[in-house]
Amino acid sequence: MQDGEVIIERRGTAGIIRLNRPRALNSLTLPMIRVIAEALHGFAGDGEVASVVMSGEGERGFCAGGDIRVLHESARAGDGLADAFWREEFRLNHQIASYPKPYVALMDGITMGGGVGLSSHGRHRVVTERTRLAMPETGIGYVPDVGATWLLPRAPGEAGTWLGLTGLDIGAADAIHAGLADLQLASSRLGAVIDALSVLPHGSSSSDVDALLQGLAEPAGESRLGQNAAMIDRAFRFDSIEEILAALAGEEGDFAAETRRVLSTRSPTSLKLALALLRAGRRSASLAECLGRELGACLQMLDNPDFFEGIRAAVIDKDRNPKWSPANVEAAKVERFLKPAEPPLSF
Image 1 (tube, rainbow, N blue to C red):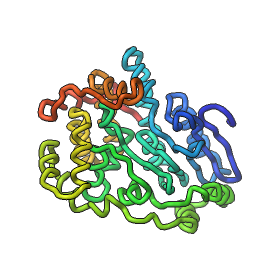
Image 2: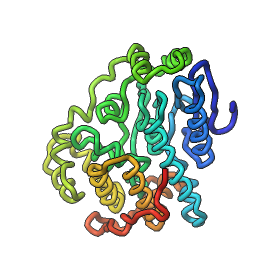
Image 3: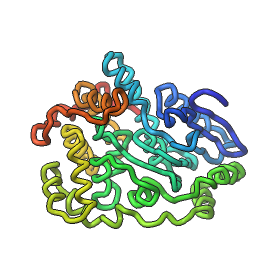
């Protein structure tokens, strides 16, 4: 397939999947998810394919996540498209996490939400000097999904809690520090990476791909999250948003002040639900368990006023000024969102 919103090709022994919506920062639609899942299945069974590469067209983004405008319209219409989208997207995330062949994600540019799901569950996660990675959902009245509640709790200390609650974007060094990526390459060398992968012998292992990538890697530099790890761990170790905000108020320095300011702009309901999901993810035994729990929460969010208000402010009216309901953290209740999905997510 050489046209359409996903381009599938074989180059030598490399199976290549290229997201092809550069004007939309390669944001995902349900048809795209289905094409990717089918391509991965086909490459897995193709003896001529030694590795699979996932990349995004254009210079601005790998993948900005799911097309939230479409999800917003589906929720308004009650047509079930959002339910189908999340179910198939989450199954794709699980497929990537358990993929039998070396899977290389080239996370060049914006990598957010669903883009993290397409990349950070993979075996070989490559970032560049242009990478901006985030799980920005609390800023749009939603919650981290695509298995982020499995990934983020396994970051060092409370770095994942910071990422999931603030929704702020990070660069290559921080992505590697948080365990969401493995190494940095110059964006100018990504073509050379694909060329090298295309001549790998059949049956090459993940260790072979590691060696190839390490041979092209460059230093990622200092991690801002690493530099502020002690403060992040002190402030975000609590299990309530109120305690986290109070702890941040007692911390000195610009990083703590900016973190507290950002949290004050996020949906109070999303913050509480995200924290509950992250803590549950820390206790979970598998990615599948986290994805199932996330789906239940996502489906309940379709009845949450903040979901509509957040997307309105971000992508419909673009005024960047959401009016959250309830407007204070103390009033936000999350229990009703923690209902299992019906039917349960299957893999």
